Length: 331
Ligand code: NAD
Ligand code: LMR
Picture (spheres, rainbow, N blue to C red):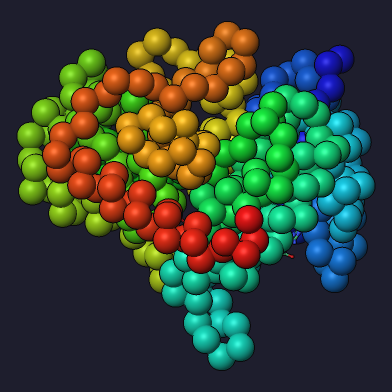
């Protein structure tokens, strides 16, 4: 049986718990691939991973390979094909008497994690490793990680699939459609309230989604606000940040890179900007992406961008440039 080596940080956390069974069950990598899991946690909770290992064993998946626990990223990252970097602090909690309100407030707290993790992956993971940052603020954490990884053959991404799934769900509800009727959803920019979910280039049954919806008021106010603020709405309702839907989006992102993207669709994740759509090179920016039949991921080119969309894309670009200056000392 073919084998794949997958590393998950923050594996004892909420998202980690929802993620591990879906990575190991055969659903993600297929029924003929053994999944070896390297689970990483901070030393204080690494012992809890033994419980996760026991549960995975008790699921009886044919596709489960080895399950190992680590608190040292250098040891964990040897020969890794796929790394899911979830480990970090969520917003909504109180640290030193101050409630962490915005994802960007986590920059100073979480950013440092990704220097060491990036370096370890750059040195020890496979040359064609793919790395998805879930921990917030995901784009700038991925920027820090990829800078320290310093390995151009590896692919770093930050997760915006959750935002794309949220956007599709809102459109499906509004238009009384199936989720599968909605294709080509792009989340431009940052995984933050400045993200821009693009309905002009999204499609419903082959037509522009904004044309199909034909309600610009709803698109520019309700839709945008709901998608941009969905993370906070979930924290307010649940008392904790999204976990099942976040794990689901991470699985969606991994799957989107495993086979060629269908001609009538694309997927959304943030990757290193090469200057496409006038986004400054070197930012980790949400783009429409395709995977080719060799597993290479590229940015979908030449989409029309309206003046309204340009304004939104420039706003989220500015936020990412500001975040980059805030973490200059970590780059
Ligand atoms: P959680 O607090 O339940 O779990 C986080 C885990 O990470 C903890 O077990 C903690 O011990 C571990 N951890 C902390 N520092 C670590 C390190 N240096 N190495 C390894 N592990 C470490 O949080 P959660 O709900 O699982 O969320 C994790 C992160 O994902 C948060 O930053 C959250 O904001 C983010 N998130 C992102 C998205 C997205 O769409 N990008 C969606 C949901 C949540
Ligand atoms: C989300 O979008 O649900 C996550 O990024 C968690 C958060 O802080 O909003």
